Structure formats: structure tokens, C-alpha cells
Length: 355
Image (cartoon, rainbow, N blue to C red; front, side):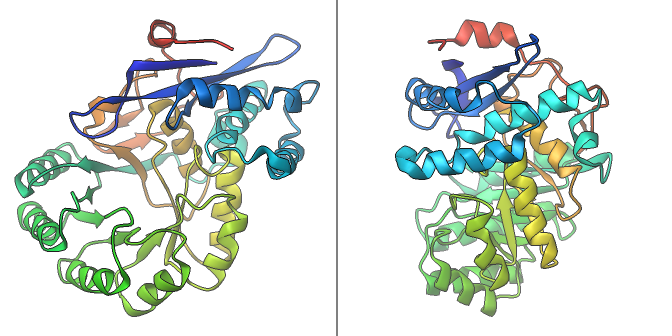
């Protein structure tokens, strides 16, 4: 397990970089799979938490993914209470080992639904309308399918001005979304959502906390624009069942990092599919994990896009050859497993500690 500081991730445009983990699972016959992992406030602290799960894996078969999923849930409940991002990379490595053994790319091992996925870019928290306009225009010119704003959130009127300026700049035919990241009351979200409807935004994401179930359900009932949420609800897919069944939101979110890996995303997407609902896959931030997300996007039918954080080049580390994206379209790799090698020079040069 490796962790990096300085060569990690920009959390806010122009801000400090955050840390990440690298998980490696090795079999008794010498095969291994590695993937990045979220690190929260501390890569070292998160690494020790992840390391605590080693006894759960020793002596197990890589094909026991479902049994291990439930064993982890039991261990977590019995006073483990681990962060939502701890299990996902372990599960992803299990799937990658199995796909490589089958000599198949991950999405084909899961069950392919398509070969290409449109990509949209999500802003960081910028400052003024001109910053968002410039980025939106560059995203459109690069061929991306859509642009999502994370507005600065200083006040609602300012945020609305930014959304209007971006719509005016990109024109009526380019898809836009809004994600205020849980900053609003219900009355504020209703007024904000009505404005987004008038500006023809494609969806309204996480205007209130994902745990604000009654308020989100009422918002969804009153607005015509799709309301999107659930990315930070813990314990996917079980926490999603009532959300989906009672139309708390129009679209749920899941990703390989915060939803329990490949297994968690598939379970979540299938719950949504049973109710004719989309499960839009949320960015996993680090590009090696984004590539796992891409395989999942290609393995389910009820997901429209792959999401990447912008500026995309700020996050384009960790993979040799980068993500297989051209003109805003991601094309699935055909080599077994992940389809790209990790950049071990970057990882080794960034390591603080190995466990």
C-alpha cells in the first residue's frame, strides 16, 4: 500500500493536493492487481485502516467476491465502522484478478453493454462567472458531451448569475448540469431548481444533503428538472432501496470508490434499473479508478456518461497512456483486466509509507 502527498490531487482549483492510496492484492500463485484508493484526511491513517482487513482476505479465493462482500459488511458492523472508501479498491482488485485470469477486459468479464461512453467534465469550485464560462467553452470545444458546474456557493443570487452566464455562452444545445453540493434549504432549492429549469439545465444534483430524505422527496415531487443524489450515502445499495422505491430523487449516484467497488456499483445500478431509474456513475477522482468506473459505465445500461473532474489535466496521473478518451468519447480498452498499466514511477516517487 503506497500513499502520496505532493504528487496527488488538486482539491480546489489552484489549491493544495490531497493524498491517495495504492492497494495491491497478491495471490498465492504470484499474480497481483493494484488500484488507487481514496485517502480522506490522511493516506497513512487510511492505509492502516485498509490494512486491518488483511486477515479477512488471507486464504480466500479471488472468485469469492460476494462472500467477501458480506463478510466485510459483518466485520464493519461489529465495531469496524470503516470509511465508505475502504472496501472499494479491494473489491476492484478482486474483479481485476478474475478478469485477467479470464483473459478479458473488465467490462466484458462483467457483461458488456456498449463499447463507447460519452464523457462530461465537472468544474472545481471556481470564483466568478468568467471562470466558469471560460472552462465551459474549453470543455465544449474539446468535444465533451456536457459540463457540470460546482458553483462557489457564496450566495444563491451569485450562483444563479453564473449558471445563466454559462448557458448564454455555450448556447442552447450543449448539456449543462448543476451540483451545489448540499448547501441549500428546501425553499432555496425549489427556487434555484425553477431557475435551472428555465435555463434548460439537464439535472440538479445534491442541492441538499443526501440524508435529507423528506426534503429531497418533496423537491423531486415539485420540480420538473431531474434531481440527482445519493453519492455520499453510506452502505450502498441497501441505503438506496427506499430512496429508489419512494422516488426521493430521480437519479441515484454510485462509484467504485464510495459505493463498495465494482460489486457495490453493480448492485446499486441494478436496484435503480428495476425501477426504470438511471444510476449515473460519480467521479472516483483518480484516473486509475476512473478507468474502473468506465468499465462499469460500459457494463450497465442505465448510465449516460463517464464523469471527469476539470481541469482534466490536473487529474491525469496514475495511468500509463492515460484514459482512452478522444473528442469527449471514451472507448473501452480491449486488453485483459483494467486495460492500462499504473504509473509505478509516479507511485514509487510519491510513496510515504508501505505496509
